[in-house]
Image: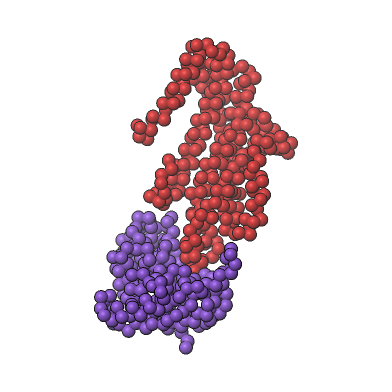
Length: 253
Length: 253
């Protein structure tokens, strides 16, 4: 099986103070272009580590990662990453923040400005371009993070628990908006979460991780039509099977 | 300035009152302890002399600290960014910064004679360490997510230093500048007593030798006032350059 993003037999070993720690073992993932895939697991299962390796931020100890047909040796131009703690630059206005990724790739300033305005509109931030991050709510900050990630027209959006720090209501709004953005931009999404409900609500397919060492324990397709109703029986059934796959400690929500 | 701030003048007024009372009680002869009015009069009589000496001292500090800034800040940004540079320089920095700049006066005179040069070199050294250490500290304190965002976006090392590390470290650099200006001012007065034939330090030592206690007092008052103004100027500069910090940190006024 080949895919747009492929992880082949990935292992990760950290040299900790108390000796070597195996964070990931034998991970095989293939993700087709346009697919929305959730990596679901409890904290410490290595799902974020895997995502950061796919983003090219750290190398695997063993195995191969292929993005858009090329083996990774650093960040790929085809991906953009969004973090839970958003990583916005507090000294830059929203506009400057959103332009940063393009600046890093040498996009000319007129084009940067136009593209940033477009992405701010898409993420519902029109009118906030001149604000500073500390003047925004948590949900708005994460919108800025998503807008920034989208500016470079990534073929895959890598999201590391992007809504994990938000209140339930804001989180629900952003999940729905993300699905709209995903549908309109036709990008692949790899989405890390520890929330079963979030995964079932969003994903085409859910990969379940179990910890110590991080391994894939299940590959669960979600065939429900969107928008999905978390109170439906079919939703609950998939959630229950995921809860079982996560193991005795269960998942949150 | 709010009227409430003027309460800060009360201790100074109390000190003036105590001074006047001590003069009236003849605790010390007037040749040691001149009355406040006579000191005030000294500002009129020796106004030009005080102004030109103050200007000489201020110029030396401005040059010395300016040079220290140009050397210490780029160095600090690099040392903070690259761990191997830190390992290379840490012990040396910790050793040299423990040496009071004043203790280098004899050596500075041997190398540079009497005049501006030894004073500026000593001020440079006095300002170098606080600027260097605070810059390094500022770079270290940067949020890791911001660096990950930049790396994932493919930002060049130059862009990371200019657009992320430099502004992130700026508040700490200003803390260093405040300490440097304070230390430079202490150093210039001392150095001028020994190694220079102008400046406020020279002026008050000379006033002692020519039995003009009112000029000594006037000189000390000017030293204190200039120190206060210098600190205020740096703080205003910081408030202007780091205005994005408003609302992020507890006020440190």
